[in-house]
Length: 495
Image 1 (tube, rainbow, N blue to C red):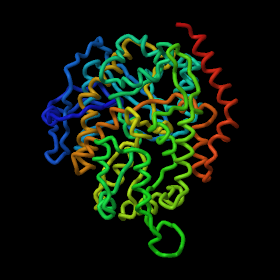
Image 2 (spheres, rainbow, N blue to C red):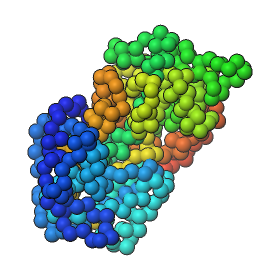
Image 3 (cartoon, helix red, strand yellow):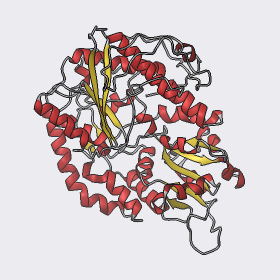
Image 4 (cartoon, helix red, strand yellow):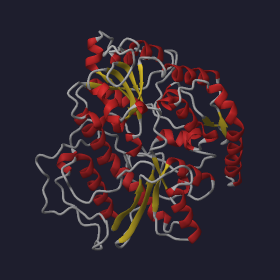
């Protein structure tokens, strides 16, 4: 949840401090241990910035858990290493995660361990779903808590396999280390079954953005996209107008291939990003807690049909048309202006000689009140607690502490050092990052995969299909059937 501007350089000094061990590690265990007092910080290590945040006290209870193992189950379509750091390496994010883990381990006298299945399929009944449901059916308390892929955790929620975090002692989701938009847009009848925040960075990696090549913008004498954002002129029409300026059949063979120039390098999931950028959602949670299908509005149909059509034009190069390396060459070789992707992609261009910047997805029109940015549902994972977990009060306190210290250490390391300090070379991109994170939101319709629309619009992108209205109508009955099942399940849980 970040995701405010961070400025004070304090953590470097903190990293020099020593911490007691988390407890005795088993020889074959991935237990995280405390920092060795004899180890000093590498003077060439990346600087880590501590956050300039309001003083919000940590109010969860502190327990002596006597060296207990706290095992975190991790799964999702993307591989990720939240909660994992075995030693200080001098890399800012790893060291911040190590600092967080050792602090919490020392505070509660625990061994923090992970069972990491990141990268295994999460499609609603994938690895995470099976692991948690099997744990519940067996009455096993092996996992204290979990970080489960978006589609799987959503199914676990309505089927009653995970706890309502609002009822877990020591977890306070109103604290700033939890994402407030998640509270607002994922809560069903006052229940929060899964969430995200400063406890990890996977949600940040999955956040949609647009990269732009500054050299191409200069070559074509285009307006500064940063100015367009600041002046409320960064709209879909302006985005397309600029892209349409930059395409060219460079080799003169009458075909548009990898060797030519383009306005936009298009990632297939950008169709969902563009829908969300306009403020549209597949489904919305109503004040009474019921979920309503809201995809088939006039504006949503217009947005999706327009983007699906523009994807077929000569200024657009669809990423699937070639390998990532070959397709990326259009961007890195100063032959493409925009690239629609997510923040993890930023690291791929760290050594790019050509200068590039970052932007939010455009507003649909200038009349739209706010920019809207979303996350790659396919890649994200969310924190939850299995229904049969033991010692939930103590687990809640550990989770709260990991999020609290994540805000202190992990968020600034990821944000100021990795993104602002390492990958971007201008202050404007830092401002854009602030805007992107401050305007993120969640779409439960995509999470619950209503009608399979999350995949079907991507298939349309792949097949150059622009007839969204027909696709929607064909799958509406299936979408509403699943939606009724989900709403009935939540209603049966009572208040």
